[in-house]
Image (cartoon, rainbow over all chains, first blue to last red; front, top):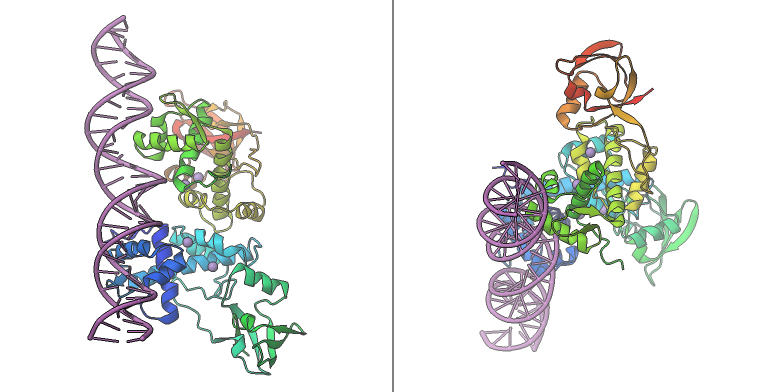
Length: 223
Length: 223
DNA sequence: ACATATTTTTAGATTTGTCTAAATTTTATT
DNA sequence: AATAAAATTTAGACAAATCTAAAAATATGT
Ligand SMILES: [Mn+2]
Ligand SMILES: [Mn+2]
Ligand SMILES: [Mn+2]
Ligand SMILES: [Mn+2]
């Protein structure tokens, strides 16, 4: 019964990729999509999918895409939980900046010790969000529910608090640092340009102009 | 030139094993000794040694045993450093007991990020010893030098401070916890039994009898 | 020194995760 | 509906890390 509990790093990374791709469109995930996400070849993905299917982590019919089983979803959530807790650790305790933590968390998420995860959670004060504003699932796999929207969807003269980024790539995060835009900042949309979709916003008592691309990668929570 | 810098977990574990076996008798290390330490077969060791030799981490002549090169020693020291720093983290920051940390550190020692190691070191206050009293090499690979001896080598009526354990297996550590023997304790040897080599010691204002086996696995520093 | 025991290496197989190239299935286009 | 395009799978290969069994080298003991 407990024959297949152990997962390799690679299996865990695939499960996580399938999870992230699956929650977006909440349907089956395509082989090519996984291959792109994992930076591997579709044939490698097919091989791994077959293995994960045999182990009961995904359900799969040839040519029909793949989706996580309950067991697979549970596994994915513990990996996501570990990943995001370690990111909080690196930023809060070791003074890393938010653009440096993902790669290291990609390694730390595979450390196997339930007690370690729970102790870390406690040590960090049971954080609900990681440094990029992404929610951290509880030990039971439950997310804190928040109603956030993208900044470019906020109507003129409305305000919100910056609570997350959609693109958490290092270049974007460094851009935000450079222009002093951080999570927790209070943002008011003053104007939108029809011409290029750019936005005039008030942030930290300053009025700045940001492109549509920036605005469509910043999450805000209505106040 | 920088073609072979990456090491797998397995390669790192072998290098570490060779390091630990080599510092003890400071000569070449036998294939069988490595196999026993790593819980693998001698044939697997031979294969790995050949690979490590090609990568420049060990020097090796067939049938003549193996020893670390400067590069290999340097690599071993960074792994030992990471292992012991993580053990300190687990005990000091996450309230693990000293018998629980080795297995997890065995995983954490392979996390690749020089900045992480150095930040962790700083976060922990640049500790010089791990929870078992083993010295932590500095970033430059230098150990704090201490003159410790085994408790069974201490003469009657002499005292010392308990600074480490030779056997750091969980059963021994739990035994010490149970009998309230901890690092930092002040110990006086009151008597030695010729019959079985057991020792009468004073520790924490109490007089107890410990076997030769216990005494020969406790390090003390003369006061 | 020679036979025996021990240690070490080699040969060949297995598992895991990956790849390329070719075949197959599904989807899109006319 | 037939054909072209795209997605997916299969076949066959490879490197890494391990194993078993057999061969070779070294060490030991009388
Ligand atoms: Mn991340
Ligand atoms: Mn990962
Ligand atoms: Mn240890
Ligand atoms: Mn290890």
